[in-house]
View 1 (spheres, rainbow, N blue to C red):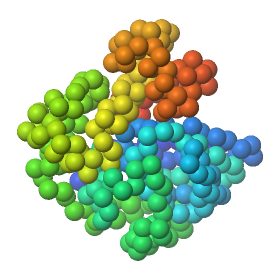
View 2 (view 1 turned 90 degrees about the horizontal axis):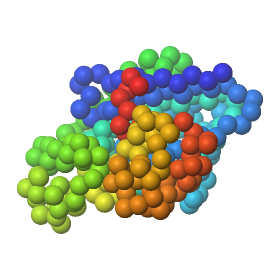
View 3 (view 1 turned 180 degrees about the vertical axis):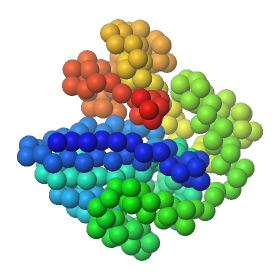
View 4 (view 1 turned 30 degrees about the vertical axis):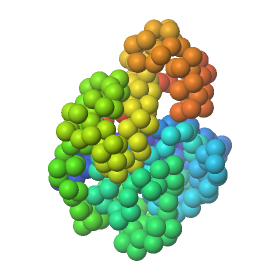
Amino acid sequence: MESFQIVLPSPALAPYIRHYWLLETDSIARSTERIIPGGNIQMLFYRGDPVSLSTRQDTRWLDSQSVLCGQFIGFSDLSYTGNIKILAVVFQACAAGAFFRMPVSEFCNQKITADEAGDRELQELEDRILYETDDRNCIRLVEQFLLHRLNPLKSYNLERMRSAVSLIDREKGEIRISDLASSVFLSTKQFQRVFTAHIGISPKEFLRIVRFQHALYVLQSVPGMTFSRLACECGFYDQPHLINEFKVFSGYTPKEYLSLCAPYSDYFSTEGD
């Protein structure tokens, strides 16, 4: 049996948290989920039996602990069997830095536990969640932690990056970095530095992820679209460019991806979809 649900944050945290998701499963057979870049930093709490989180670089077994997952450029595989409970906090694109002492760019392509970060408050939260059986109480504990830790970033830079991300979203990733910089009154060099500090990856990498996520959303919305038309509509140079980006972010060609997965964009789909 498997259940999955999305929970919206409280109004006070909505500017910083996109949503929470909860996965619970009790399966005899081993299952594997392919995780693709969604453009957001996440914090995951694992309860129950150990799970394996594998990337091209390494495989890590996670057992009853919290993990801060930075922005990822590639894909990873979450493998599990038995009784699994996972609670995830999905941050808004600009917001994770408001809760952590380290620059978010430092854990790009990284999975960092509370122990590794030396974060005693996060370790205490992890212990409390481990022994809490009610998911609603788990989210309440997470929200208390986040509200306590909230340290709003310098408003002028945060608002600039929110404006830039909003423009990226409207253009579905099809915009030049120089135009983004001009839209928030920064030089291109300044913009790249501030953007990376707030988002966790460079503007170029983020634009690539957004274009890929938009391609997934189009496939989700218009089943049967040809790949040549998809490449044209989603800002790829040509079909080979589209295929290459799919391989980077999902490990599959578009054809292989559709044969294995129902296309779904975490980034462009609303929480109610």
